[in-house]
Length: 369
Ligand SMILES: Cc1cc2nc3c(=O)[nH]c(=O)nc-3n(C[C@H](O)[C@H](O)[C@H](O)COP(=O)(O)OP(=O)(O)OC[C@H]3O[C@@H](n4cnc5c(N)ncnc54)[C@H](O)[C@@H]3O)c2cc1C
Image 1 (tube, rainbow, N blue to C red):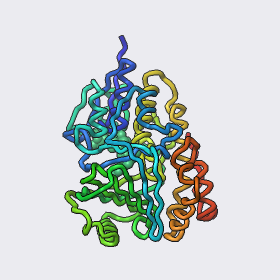
Image 2 (cartoon, rainbow, N blue to C red):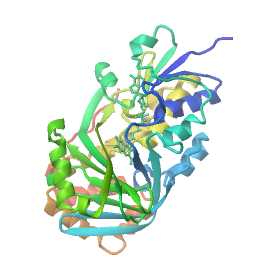
Image 3 (cartoon, rainbow, N blue to C red):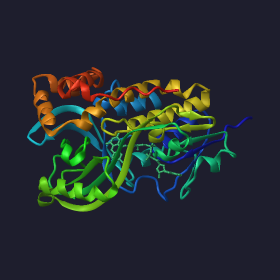
Image 4 (cartoon, rainbow, N blue to C red):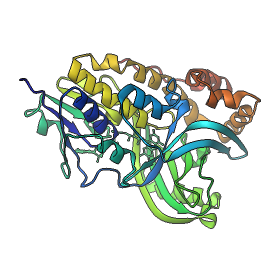
């Protein structure tokens, strides 16, 4: 019997999702993970936001129904509060889920790992060149832009550094807070996501700065918002985070999934949902011979829609943000944005162009091979 040999680089969200799907087709890949553990060095609480994952308004149910992948959230989040320097708006409803990331047993990666039977080689930092001779296919699922850049398929959209802190204090445990302030983030945002009523992560995402400037931005935020007076910081971490697209998800026997396959959307920098989808679709392409770019057409189309937000956010002033939140207070608008099944990404993209100025939107759609 002919056995298809598949290597997966990275036991992350996309690599493990790919393995789960391959196993359903009777293919047992070998997974190579650089760390000595499954999970991330930096603990945090991530979000599955229905606004971004639509038409899958409930991402957890969608992943289960479509792919048989089971994920248990930390909890549902029911409120999001947006702050601009002189305004704030809050939205309530079934908005999405908080997920645990890091090394914990109930982290997203550890939950996925328990659904995988294939062999995982820990402490194995590998490159496609190390594997392509011994395997029929190599899946790059390493969460990074370096390999797709080397293969000439990466198109960068957003380059950020993230500072994160774990804080103790009193928190609303079903509420996501998001600060919009371009002097502090240069077109991105700062967020607070709670673990519990007593513990939360605050992460500060800044665009287009060098690592040497990161600490300055972080402490400017902490001081200007009185964070250290209100909460105790018990842990700090930092890491780069880039979003981009790829011109193709396959080059010969090499496949690209997750962040390496253009799966981080360039609006908020979210990528969990796309990592699961692209991992599964790469597996289906290997198992069934379907063109992976066709399988991922909708995912990349959504990314292209979200790319239209980037130049608008990059050049928005704090006055623009104040006005935007003011507009969001219009009766009915908040619930329409967050709580319906309308494809708001498309509608909002047009709305933002009106508020912030059509002329700022100069990014043209990139053509995929
Ligand atoms: C601070 C932060 C907050 C985020 N918050 C959210 C959020 O709220 N919502 C959301 O949807 N997304 C969020 N994201 C994005 C999301 O986490 C990623 O898009 C998603 O995890 C990407 O999945 P992946 O499989 O591509 O990579 P990962 O899940 O990062 O997995 C890659 C794996 O490959 C391993 N690896 C790397 N290089 C090698 C190598 N050469 N050899 C072997 N192994 C290797 C790594 O150790 C890692 O385990 C966030 C990202 C960051 C950085």
